[in-house]
Image (cartoon, rainbow, N blue to C red; front, top):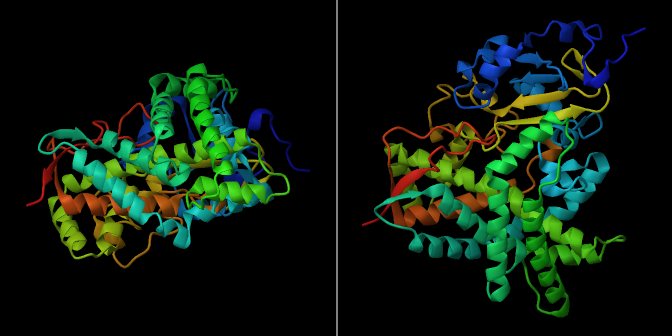
Amino acid sequence: MGAAPLAHGRVDPEVSAGLGALPRAGLREVTTGLAQYFRPGTHRSCLSRLGERFLIDLPGSPTLLVTRSPEDARAILTDRGEALSLGRALERLTPHPVLFGSDSLIFLDGEAHARERRRLAPPFHGELMRSYEEAIAAIASERIAAWPVGRPVRFLALARRFVLDVMRTVIFGVSAGERTARLDRAMVAYCRQVESGAFLGLGVLGVLLAGRWPSYPPLERAAAAVDAIVREEIAARRRSRTRRDDCLSLFLELNAAEEEPKDDATLARDMRGLMLAGYETTAISLAWMVELVAHHPAVLKRLARSVDAGEDAYLDAVIAEAMRVRPPFPFTGRRVLRPFDLAGARLLPGTVLVISIMAIHERPEVYPDPLQFRPERFLGTRPGTYTWLGFGGGVHRCLGAAFALFESRVLMRTLLQRRLVRPVEERAEPPRRTHPMLVPAGQASVVLEARG
């Protein structure tokens, strides 16, 4: 008979010799090396010496199996929720339940997840997505014209405002009138709470409480204010017979056709969740793109020439390379729901699998000189499905990935048609140390200059 599972998600080393043979990171190694393992320059972490995979097994925490293997990433990400769960990993280690609600898309598995994803997917693909280009370009042009010229700006702040404008217009479909101004204020206040140090502290507390997430009244009040305005907009849409092409209108049509339609409160929460999911990650990615090209004049020169010629190939390569060297989320994970074999290692329920996206993006056999910013890597070459994980992968790959890339292309193209970019400091910015995402430490401080 095999060995029995241990309590609290522990891994019984007798279940698999392969797992028992894996190196284990001690408390000192975790304390000194874990943060660096998910930051640029992963080879500098003492954990990198433990090999492709290693275990972290600390008191009060589920066992973590951390991997930088693309083969492991393929095996983990191709599971369709039958043995592994993204939602259960998020519930245990992140405050996502507080932000999105435990019954939202990212917490669903199997057929329930597939069904909800099909419901939410239509606005983010194909001709409908491309129909947003004129609106996004108009927002970009208006914003760029108002941005300061000739003096330092924090591009992350500018990108956040731009992305919020796009979300309001394309997702909520609110672009004029008194409700627009109120929604703008409510969205900014909500995002400010999400970005606050207090909320980041709540994330640490929730991990220490084993995934029992305390309420955070300031965020709840800000969320309620956004949802109230969205419910007003929903009611106004139902009174109007005008055909509109934004996400909210499409979701209302699809929801009305469901056998069990969602109520307005849930629809409003879903809209807010879509906004939040696409807001911070896209803004951060845009900030890194501008910061990186500002510090690489040859790349900037070639990019400006290609944009002037109306060509997108090099621009797309710049976007892909920026997301390789600075993926917004440097890791992803799954929690084991039922026994799962990972290349000879038999994992028991409760174990959390952690993929270091950053370490995979820095594999020299895949990306020679991996710390160098070289967009040419992606000219004529599509990013690898399991070696480029800027949007995660598998059935839980970011729903809005195509839209985020499209939005980035439009803003970067519009910006470089009108402005030159130079860095404020000679040295490139590192990521901020106190944030789980790779946020530019100086908020991507650059100078925008008019093109002659």
